[in-house]
Length: 368
Image 1 (cartoon, rainbow, N blue to C red):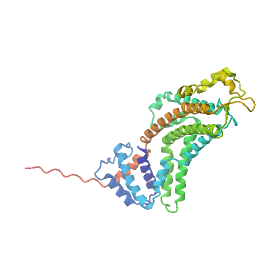
Image 2 (tube, helix red, strand yellow):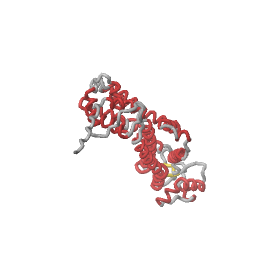
Image 3 (tube, rainbow, N blue to C red):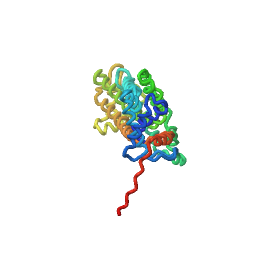
């Protein structure tokens, strides 16, 4: 079931199950909404309560939920804020993204008041991302177990969750908890106006935290890709401040490299960026003039800044953008194929039993 209709049906279901007396949503409104949803449309027949939810029954429940939500909005406009909190980003997203940018910006200053042409902060970020790419590729080609392929949707989701790393599982769980906490805060803030609705809204929040796990997992993956992109952007911003605003020189000091090995290392690090932007890497002899000797040495930072920017773009930003697109597509796919709760068939049967019987059609008169 798609995310938006499922959330609407799940919210109405939670309210109906928690409001048996009809204080928040009267029984007359429920019956009228059922008749409106069934009016001149294809309606599933009331049969076995254990029957599977089908496309026609999903559409019927979604129409009924929309009709009931329209009535609820008149008395409780905050109902839309609850649905938006369940579907939209949270402050947790913004905090993680800001932290990624600030982290990249801060480590750009790790080598002191002079720009080291080896750009060790860049090397750390590139190596970290390369390790992540290898892990993602290995997981993408990981063959599923036969019993997993033939298992239920819930079993496949649980197996996919277990294949994730610890950090991603923690992030997805934290994301789900933050969505739940955001909805709970809205309920607590407006409980004086919506006291009869509060139990149903809290049940909806708990149910959605469980059913929305595939979406939270994909959102966590997308958040990690965005954070890596912003960390690279922060790194580039930090080097821009150092080289352009603070006018720091670029050079290299005492390392394990001699001039020849330093040239080889720089070609390995900046080779792709150098070829694309046609920025030559100094020869081993020229590198000697960039060596720091006490307080002197070094040279202009401009060419090295461009090499740093393009290396970050090639090894971090562009692959992460590809991962971001793929994750967004996966998120759209999962939001269109969410599983319905096991209690929905019984709920559907109860709703259908409350409908008045359809009038029997009279047999056509024979012409004589």
